[in-house]
Image (tube, rainbow, N blue to C red; front, side):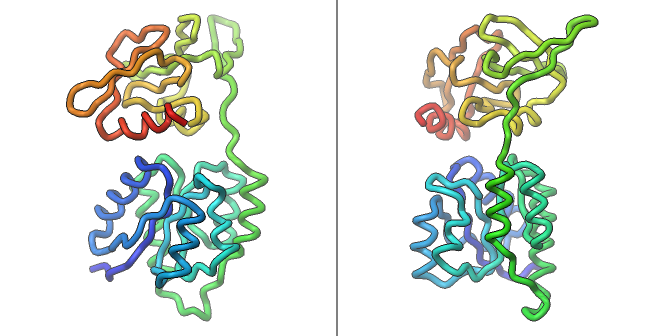
Length: 259
């Protein structure tokens, strides 16, 4: 049986916060989330005035800056698992410094592996456990920030041409095929599932509306209330199906539109 572990989640995206908390409770039901924080400022204030838990989950990019600013202002005494959308260049720094990380969108198997690494390190003596060099990791993060996809290579017969991302109104998946629909209402097959596209597209511009659809904010003409707390969106060009935002995602969707 796992020992009781107290943890803190530092995350400013409500959907990711709920998802991470639910996954942790499923994998380690004896663990207790004692606090959730959403900014550098709130985290520093709380840590200065409260006992520190054994483990933190920290989103790197918070609303008011990188979470590493927390370490500049207060000594974090617990161990840290970072959550990140940064590329592999930055990820290598985590491995070198014996820090674990979770890539977004979260996957249960990755969370389980990160937890097991924490549990293994927790059992080491303080003499053998090394303290991570957060400044070195911060330098790597600044040099290796996520680069989002700017274009796709599209094949048409025996020829290829480039399709800029900013010309795409939305992506939809049907029968295991992903189609990009442009603002000029042209359809193009792309060789990526929506899960991969969700990681490659700039989240300021694109939103995963549901299992079938990723939308460009510029394609949204109207948002309507739907039953059971859901939302219905009208897209331009029109989408053949019903673009519905689930109740669980509705709050995050409205926050995304209103940024």
